[in-house]
Image (tube, rainbow over all chains, first blue to last red; front, side):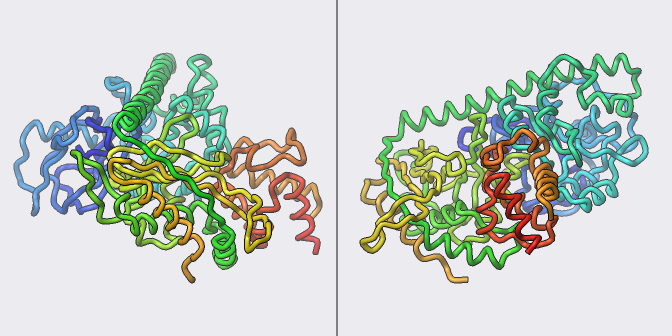
Length: 467
Length: 82
């Protein structure tokens, strides 16, 4: 069980995407794990062949526990008995009966992508892997195969028809976050399966089971008579509600613990400066005229890019405070703190961001933001950043004085970019300005060092790279 | 393109990004981004889809001017009748 965040000490294995005998490579997504904050895709850290799956789906295990065993070469002929049992559970045979399994692990009902309740016959591992590659949530796919099983053709068809992410209205997204509803568990009733606010409201309401979208599919999904199915659906919904409440509470608790630790242990100091974004804005506009509209860059990308470059110049702020001493990081792994409007947070990382150009930062930021909100992040994307950025520009506030994520020693904050009066060469002009702040750990650095970081961010933003 | 056609196009496109967007109750000057809670990434997507549907590339300067319903409709009408 990998550590998927500084505050994580255990995780629930949700699903295996491999089975004994499969060849795996470093970086392959092999399992889905539930942490207090979200479901995360776990990548393999080595090449090999799966010998045994040690942990069953639904099991909670501590960080560091063995999840599966790999061999370096061909699979051994003999696998132990209990291991076989585990693998059977993890990947049900394709032609199994469509009889629903008892909801023995109710808390998973919302989150596991492949549920008997939604897909009558489990899709093949190949299909599941392909679905992951394409970023398709199998619970949203209606299968055309025998018994309603999702086939590879369904996936390619769906991918072809376009949607790279489930369409979710911002209002629905906000409601889902507030209620702790996993969007992957909601079937949209809008055009093209888009999730609308009403869908979320239905998903969080116990009553009126007949109008809930999930019920429309009951006759297809279950061989059981309608009455029993309806009862089961009602039970699922209360379970879902409890799971949603639990998820929201877990996230709140984990933020509470981490932030309390930060404020208890870290003597913060704060610095702030105002940066003129006229030049970088003009530069981006020029670039944007040449880019396809969909790849157009937004100011946040430049701010993240400049922060990563600046952190490389001031290594004393890029790293971790561990066991009473500062340990500098090799690269600038930039944490992007995404505020989920309900109050929850996720902080995916842009690895070695100091080596990226603005358009690469833009592409990564777009991808991470979408997946953090609607899909899943991978384990490697939730590893410990070396410095973090809180960008509240879209929330319309002027500045943010952040709380450092331990064991990091610095957090850079950006407010909204707004046109404001600014003195330029002795004249008053209207320029796009942003307030940049730094919260830093006084144990590791003094304000003079922090000032260098803010000055560097300013300077870098005045000298955008040439195309 | 008539103002009605522009309005329909805007609404259709907006619904692809914000499925329950309803323009009928929206004040003409209301800020689209604030009203529908579009962040900067959502807005880029809206403009991209609108460009495709309208059949011409909407430059960033013009997109910035399309903050409100009226402004967006005016822009579409002006650009397609030129």
